Image (cartoon, rainbow, N blue to C red; front, side, top):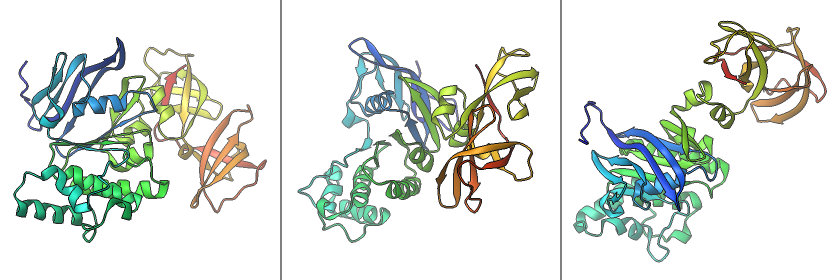
Length: 355
């Protein structure tokens, strides 16, 4: 098959129905997605879903038993054929940073570009240290740096040889939440400044949202949806994606007309699921931002739990049926447990799945 692309913006990385098996057991099945030059992608999912295995196959550490991986227009992996990792021009940032403790920061950065002329190598190190916000750290050793600084050095080292593709394997999992979010945004800015195509693997959706342009949600070796963060949250293609992304609850409903679903909180206008007729039983996804606190509303629910989040409070509210819903409310509306409050629906994106 010809590996040229008709598109004026060909994918830099393309996976075509990739299957990866261990001892006859498929760990990844029919995985297909692509990344354009300069885009940042993410494989997101729970532990054991196959996302790291897919990353290792892209890096060249695992063979594929089906499909193929195409990088910069060249097939680098197919059944019985695998291009060596060092021949792929792929950079890797590991979970544990993997910095050389006996080398200075500058020495770590120089490691992958040892063959470059000295002046060019030294100029590249200066540029990279500036890029990652550590211009004066070249003489330091890894143990003299914080976790966040070590992660930035690891990123700079991976970028040093100007890889075609950068892979990041759970890069922030050892950092605290606040640092993880801040560093995630910094890493995105750095990658965009270099126009680097990158693929991140993580189980943390906040990390995925902060860094990636496109995100693939994986479950049990299969890709459930490859999309923007906005669409994954507001337009999940599968119930698993709706459950895994963000917070929310499902309320039972019934299709009452071609574009209407009735449930405990009232009637919603929406498209019913495929092959769902009138009176079909469905589940309606309600996010915390779909439920508005409104003292004037005749519809009421009881506060059963509250989580203070600074500017907002996440309330768990018990409906008359005993079912619970979530509501995100500005924190100056401080209600006591057991109190009944008025609520109303404000659902911009109605998500319905056949029960």
